Length: 81
Image (tube, rainbow, N blue to C red; front, top):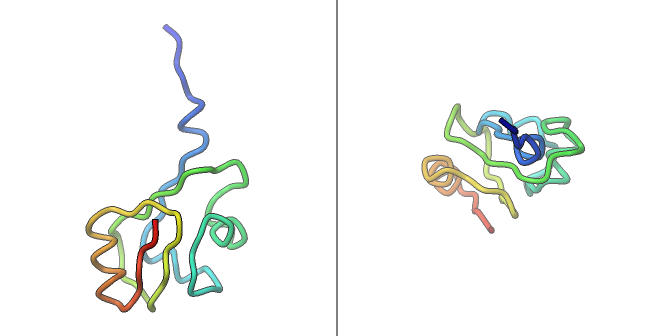
């Protein structure tokens, strides 16, 4: 049996409350890497609905769950895919 782990090595999942660690209102893959929330080898990130937001953020090019997207928009932010 051969396991294909290549895709798992490039994906990361972060929580809504982790966004407070980013020093920018615009959140993209680069800003998550600079905040050490994801490793340098990560190519795909998903934000899940876990925790609370501390402000309004603009999410650019990052997947979000429906619940996370609803909370981001309710907090005055927006999601641009």
